[in-house]
Amino acid sequence: MPFELPQLDYSHDALAPHIDKRTMEIHHGKHHAGYTAKLNAAVEGTDLEAKSIDELMTSLDMSNGALRNNGGGFYNHSLFWKVMSPNGGGQPSGGLADAINRDFGSFDSFKDAFSKAAATQFGSGWAWLCVQESGKLEVCATPNQDNPVMPGVGCGGRPILGIDVWEHAYYLNYQNRRPDYIEAFFNVVSWEEVQKRFEN
Ligand code: MN
Image (cartoon, rainbow, N blue to C red; front, side, top):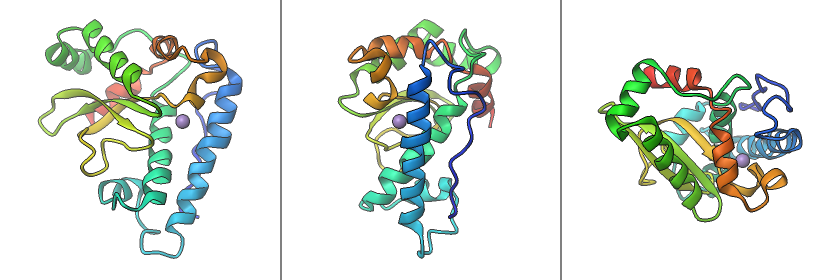
């Protein structure tokens, strides 16, 4: 089994009240665990077994549904847990803050663009903040478990922040109020982690 469900850096209740304990238990312990198991099944016995998740994503055959959905699910959730923290919230500083101001005008304008991408993604998917080859920051969204690292999804660059807008990410606590969940997400964003990913 090449892929293992990553442990959380915090307890299931650590992000409450913004993200509730039960949602975290099911989201990490059932959904992410499920993507991990199905990803392992998809690569088992093939020459893909030796590849890293990054290699699998960048070289993905988009017609391979099992790998696209479950590899994407594994990659996306692994990023998602890391960019949140009980000590999160506030605003970025340093080079990331400068880049946000340069490319969006202000932190509030960035937050509006990101929140809008997340709120208007029809059905299930993700919204992302990505760094382009040129260093420019861009916001975009992808359906289902697609992500910007996959070829040809029309949303490129290296993702440094992502929000899961599948109903399983928020429905227990927020029901149909996705915008409230998106607003609450900003209270747990680990800008320290996003900054680290920006610099890399
Ligand atoms: Mn999810």
